[in-house]
Structure formats: structure tokens, C-alpha cells
Picture 1: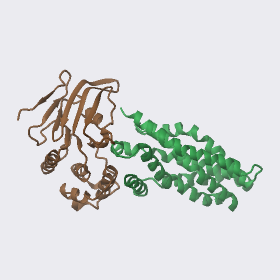
Picture 2 (picture 1 turned 180 degrees about the horizontal axis):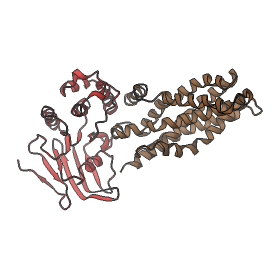
Picture 3 (picture 1 turned 60 degrees about the vertical axis):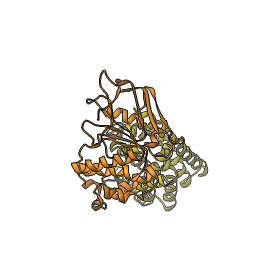
Picture 4 (picture 1 turned 30 degrees about the vertical axis):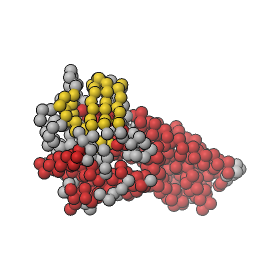
Amino acid sequence: MRLRGSDLTCVRGGREVFRGLAFTVEAGEALVVTGPNGAGKSSLLRMVAGLVRPQQGQLELEDGDPELSISEHVHYLGHQDALKPSLSVRENLGFWAALLGGGGEKSEVALAAVGLAGLAPLPAIYLSAGQRRRLAVARLMAVERPIWLLDEPTSTLDAAAQTILADLMRAHLAGRGLILVASHGPIGLDGVKELRLGQQQSKQRTQPP
Amino acid sequence: MTALCALFIRDLRLAVRVGGGALIGVLFFLVVVTLMPFAIGPDLGLLARMGPAILWLGALLASLLALDRLLATDHEDGSLDLILTARVPLELAVAVKALAHWLTTGLPLVVSSPLLGLLLNLEAKASGAVALTLLAGTPALTFIGLIGAALTVALRRGGLLLAILVLPLTIPVLIFGVAASNAAIAGPVPFGAPFGILCALTLISLVIGPIAAAVALRQGLE
């Protein structure tokens, strides 16, 4: 499986965010999108998720499921955790598992993996910011999807949770998955490709190991 | 199918839990209708004549009041983004949401209308006619409102704009709803004609609402 974007231009609110952007991610690869605030990291991830329309350029997925669109292949972990405060932790995760993947068998395992098993019956309104983020991360485990789009995934996560997330990402890459991460800091993976967004340069290079 | 069931059950749960707002519409309906006899005065004949119109007007306003919860909350917390990446057609997803919304906000209005009819000196037959026309007509209000909700989803606190946007489109439903009720109570028009048109309006909105709302949501992406 290979995700390729070519000559992508993004305009939001009449302002050009980036132009002529090209990138390729192969199965088993992670691409870290970096750049200053406002460089278009989130916009790029939302574009891949099908939530922002490219002004020009193309996104292609090779060897994907031809029945599905690119956005139906992705897990989108955005800035918002998409949790309902009045539903319990288990109900929140179970709902997303059923909606995104058609099954909730792995929800309990996922909850245990992110350390929220003991809080499962609690309404989500009582969760802290970090716990809300952990619950959002549990979605990645509960439903299998080949492309992960993670927007600042480590924000509000503590060290233990960052390790859990890094392990999850490693396992996903080992299973021939694709990951696009927008991040300012280290994400705990070695030898990943970097896509630097900025005013002038928007070309892809491989980070020295 | 599992996905749509999950969405349906989740929306029902959200509506009946704390802060879900399922009862806000009914309470508003109650307030509007109970205030009417005080404003109009103790003329029982006049109240009975105006009853169907007052009940329909109250139900219409109560429906509009609840509409901004239909999609806006999902947009605010990022749920709508994820629903867009689900492997279900967006048209069906919004239709399921609207159905759950009607069950929790529209149906309680229908159920409570005979009770409120007592306050307006409506006879049993008249109350039944109003309840029947509300049952046939309120789904149209929700599904027409769905279009407005999709158009105004990105606006914070767009509730009033939404109501103003949707109101003109709901006027035919109001006209034929009240006409059918009055036809059943007093005649001389047969009940079937306006009631048939009311049902037709509902059926049309059931089809057009989800399709137009899905188009509006996709266009709203930026």
C-alpha cells in the first residue's frame, strides 16, 4: 500500500497555506510532518482524511481497497477527542468501534492497553485532558484501519502514555500500516521520514538515523 | 448496518441523558400553550376554535428550538469529522441522526398534545385530529430542519439563524397541518385532502432532507 500526494495546494479562508506539496508514504513507513504554527500540518492531515478539499493536486492510494475512498481507510486523531461527556468511557469507545469498524470486540483490550479499564463505567465528563486523549488513542486499537493520521498525538499525554502510543505506532508499522504524524517534538520512533512545511521549502527528506 | 444502529442508539442515549435536551422542546410547548388561554381570555368557544392552530404553532416553534442540537454538538467536539470517515453513506448517517432526533423531540410533542388540548377546551375528537396531524407533520419539520442544521453547522451559536432559515420552508407544513385538523373538527372540507398533502410533504422531506444535508455538509468542508 502506498499513499502519494502530488502538487497539493491548500487554501483556507482565502489564504494559501501551502502550494506544490508532494509526499509519498509506503506501507510500514511513518511520515512526520513538521513546521512552524500555521504551516499547514493539520490542514495536510485533514486533507488526507477527506475533511479539507485540495485546491489543486491529487491524493492517490495504491493497493488500497478499491471499494473504499481514502478517507474510509484512515483513522483521524485530531485536536478534538470526539467524546461525549454524558456517555461512559466504555460507551464512547464502543460507539466509535461500531461506527468506524463494525465491531466492538477489541474495545475492552484497547481500554486496558491505554490504562482506562478501571474507569470504563465512568461518564467521560470526569476524565482529565490526558485521560480523554488516552481514550481517543484507544480508538486506534479498537478498530483496524491501515492509515493513521495523528495530529499532535502526544499533547497532554504523560510519559507513560507516550510510550504506549509509540509502542502502538511501532506495532502498526510492523503490520504494514501507514502513519502520518504532525508533531513539534519527538514521537519516539526511529528512522522516520520527515516532511517539513514552511514558507519556502516543502520538500521531503529522510532524517539521518 | 451495525454502524448506523450504533449511531442511532448513541443519539437516543445522548438525548435522554443529562444535558441532552430531549425535554426542552416539550417544556417550551407546554409554556406556549398554557400561556395562550391567559392571553386570549376565558372565551371557551374562541379557544376551541383557535386550539388546533395554537397547538400546531407551539409544536412548530418547539421543533425549531431543538434543531440546533441536531448537528452542531457533533461538529463542536469533532465527532462529525469521524462520522465523515465512517464507511456509511453520509446521507444515511444524517437520516439516522434526524430520525433519532425526531423520536426524542418530535414524538414527545405529539404525545403531549392531547393533554395540552384540555387546556384549550378541545374535544376528544379534535385533540385526536391534532395529534394525528402532528404525528404526520412533525417528521417533516425535523427533516426540513436537517437541511438548515447542515448549512449552519459551522456557525457558533447559529440557533436563531437556523430557525429563521428554516421557518419559511415549514410554512406549508403548518398550513396543511392546521387545515387538516380544522377539516376533521368542523369541515366543510373533507379531512383526506389536506391530510394527504401533509403526508406528501413529509414523504418529500424524508427524501430531500438527508440528501440536501449531506451535500451541504460536504460543501461546508474547507
